[in-house]
Length: 138
Image 1: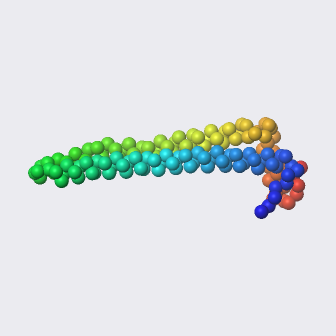
Image 2: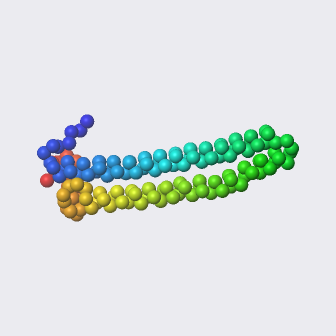
Image 3: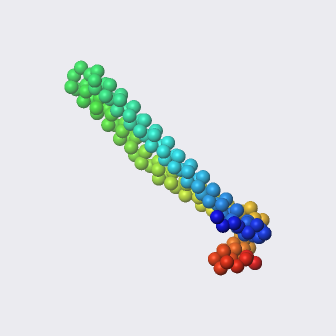
């Protein structure tokens, strides 16, 4: 694996800054993935509970009208649950987009280098050119 030059603090700072940004992005995205999975599990549980409840009522019913009433009683709660479930991922996506924008803004404002953003960008470009051309960073 390529060893980074230890003698260039600007280059090391640039690499550390990029890893911090990548870490912030991945933490935010993994959190949103967990939220979507939790929403899927909760929606599945709600639907299964309603189905089992209606099935139990249908099995214990004594007439066809009772069985149809139990089946019809399942439709209304599902009709209310489905739109709420459909809105949830879009709300999560909007929240995570804001979180990612804030992480990028924090990275640009205070990357931990102690340099103003414009000077840091200049040093990052210099380090990038040095890597591409094989020259040491100036």
